[in-house]
Length: 422
Image (tube, rainbow, N blue to C red):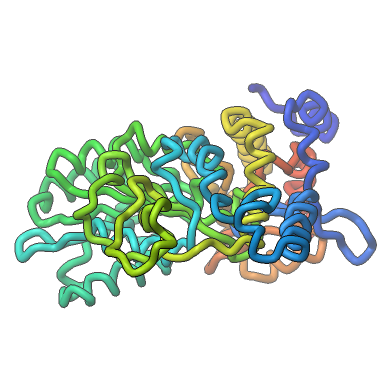
């Protein structure tokens, strides 16, 4: 699309936007004067859908009216509440419903997956991760190595950008696998980098890893609801993600987990287990040996927190109605418009760290402002922009296509321009 740098053009794009009605389904923070803030921080916490309150209230009412019988007779019976959402979540990550389970939180799920899929041997024990992965991933991977009495200095292989660059090159990952493939037990990559916004080529990463029979897992914290990872088709072994960013389920809400179909019925696979992963037909018989459900549900430990799950149900309802393909199409256009406006500022001190190709990014652009400090970020906040600052000089801007508008993007760039020229 050929963009124009005018407010009228942004408003025309909004008028023609097939998803424009969904903006009114969300609650936006307000400034002290009552004006709506420019919220561009869905990569950290998604906005609350207006209907979420009603979804939670329904669960409270069912609990009040039914007590324990809510497990079977609630509006959304609690016994199967998370199972009912597997199909909706599967569409978002490109999986079969039986490969997806909503449970726990992201790093808990990452540990549970590494219990099952990190199988070190004296010769094959190394883990590959991107060097600038989100800190929790690094902590989790290092602790797993230590648990197996492996020195992280020896057991961790970092996929790094080249000197003077900010992005990881796929050919450099291929080189790591070619050189160390017989020593690597696990590749565990964040699908979309939280700092740079780079979306990695998950299909190629998986293909290259499988030439050396390496297990592959992905952290979709910044991918789920943002890009389409097509987990089943690319053949990833597992993936984990949170739902409070692009999936708008609420702060600290439940995470998601993917286990490929080829693994889900394997009763002999290592796993930490709990009663909610037990065969449903005999779950309440008690005092029997663990019999895992032959789907991703077999990795569950405990019954899910229903009030948290209500927030997930609310957001997935909107995703189902909008259609993830439509959301992704708008994302490409919306972030492209933001990119155009930033470039049109034509300021030497501003650069975009995120890849220019829409296939290599989601909706986030990481904007580097040389010689700036956090005072610039505070100026933006004072003028009604909600974004994210990362030291030393990067502002992360993530226009979420389900609720952000082209006018939001235009307004942000005008405010940024005014702050820089002040």
